[in-house]
Amino acid sequence: MYRSGDIGFAIGKSELSKTITAVAGKFSHTFQFIEIGGVLCVFDAQIEGCYPMEFGNWMNKFGYEIVVLRSLKTDPNFTRNCVHYFGIKYDVKGLGVGLFRSLLRCKNMHEKFRDNGKFWCFELTARLLHFPCPENWNGEQIYAQLIKKGYKKV
Image 1 (cartoon, rainbow, N blue to C red):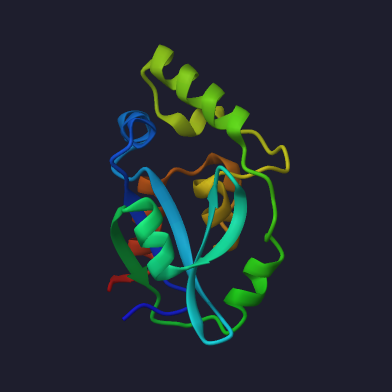
Image 2: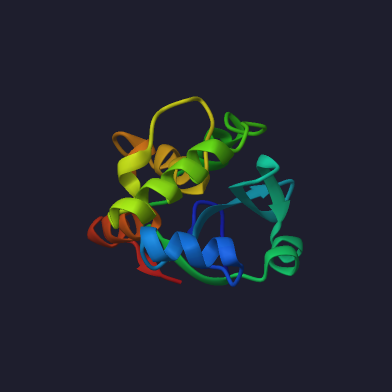
């Protein structure tokens, strides 16, 4: 059903996910589908860093409710582009600072980001999609931009 290059949006049930959606919009997480050796994997930024995981294992581990978008144009180099980001560290400090500032200011979370060489999920997805200033996007904004670009729900 899903294929390499599809972009996913998740709503988690954890307290952290609920906090993220409270300040960053509808989605608490973004991810990408890639194929490695014929196996469908999710590539995302989690606390362990940016690594691929087989889709079924990923769903079992995290249990997200997901929405997936697909471009009408497939990028044959999408998985290759993702490989460049394998092993990048997760931006724990940036996430924590951003959540705290957003809660204090009652403003959207995207105002906190800075480019520090570490990623969290929204930044990784925006970077892979070649969005300008990838550190400034949240899941809801990425979703809206992809819909504008003609992506369709799978």
